[in-house]
Image (cartoon, rainbow, N blue to C red; front, side):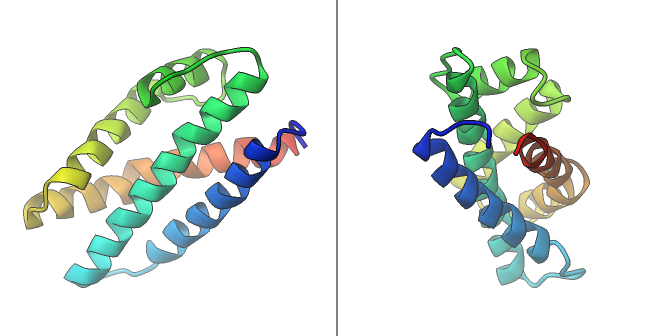
Length: 132
């Protein structure tokens, strides 16, 4: 494994579960309003664990990141993630989705999750899987 740090191991297990649940929820082709809300919450959880696992990994490499934005920037510079701008966009949408519920906004976020954000999370998952 990447490190013997138990916090990283536990966080990775939680990230793996969140990735799986988000992936499975995205198989619903025409989600109801309730299902859309669930998918967005699964995205929020997977995103939160994504930046935290980046932060934990970066700390094992000698970096310090005190916020999601810092973790994303450092992960991009370290080559952990590829599309830094899209990750920052995902951070902004995650922040928006946690404070506002509007049907039109929710539909837009769901489309972005399918098209852009889940692929980012999936790439991160595969990155850490390959380091095992």
